[in-house]
Amino acid sequence: METIIAHNLSELPAVADKLLEFAAGRKKFALRAEMGTGKTTFVKAFCQNLGVKEATSSPTYALINEYSYSGGIIRHADLYRLKSADEAIDFGIEDYLYDDEYLFVEWPDIIADILPYDTVRINISVDEQGYRHFSFQ
Image (cartoon, rainbow, N blue to C red):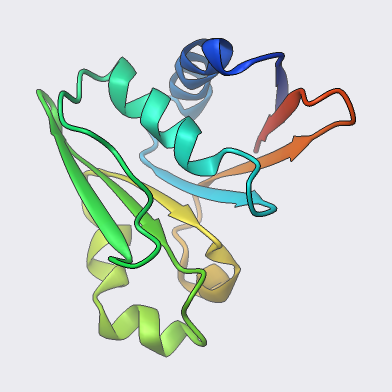
């Protein structure tokens, strides 16, 4: 496990670089954090680091957003509104979990039983000073 503290948003690209280094080629990420802790902002920094040119946004209503970069696709899923794993399976989450593209999943607990064994777990918390703590497992 590795923990990194970001004192402000300008440090998120460096945290995203550390994630790539920690992941060592793994491309599936489960993001666990409370509402408003910066999950989408962190995915945006990751996308920018890989050269995504298009605007990134929260997939809360679309369920999944896709962004192109020179090496393929980065997908960003938000399962907050889903009530069951069956709903995730119905929209095709398994296809995304087991392909060779990047996938970030917000609110992953609902699909915990079908996540690939090598999924990188990212926990984000914010302390009383407003610093973001990122733990990679």
